[in-house]
Image (cartoon, rainbow, N blue to C red):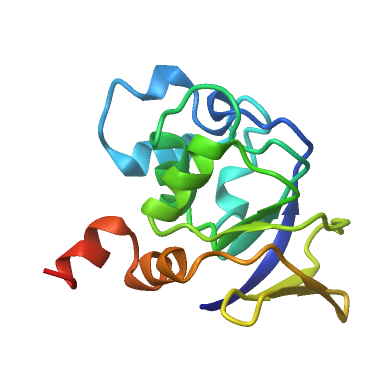
Length: 156
């Protein structure tokens, strides 16, 4: 699986409450979640996420295990998230929902182009290629299918 997008830089320890505030979880309307993603961090951030690759610090997705956080990012148009380490439940939620999560410690420059190839195991920015922690073949299949539900639909 390959992808690319402009970098949106975030700090470490971004928790799921920052990704999508609990007050928006009274609805199941995913578009509402996408419109309000990161609202408490930066109200102007959501529109900049379409086609973006988030580059964050360690422990991205910590906090509650709500899968709505990964859904909100995907619905907002995030191509992938790169961080040195993800909260484990968020990591599985993201993969299961078809959101590429890439474990790599990158220095982020806002709006720089980020390219990645999960099959070959690299992420590139500023002309420099970095080796990433590889995903299992099954996780790559899940991502390629668009998420776990789609994966199982194609594997009866």
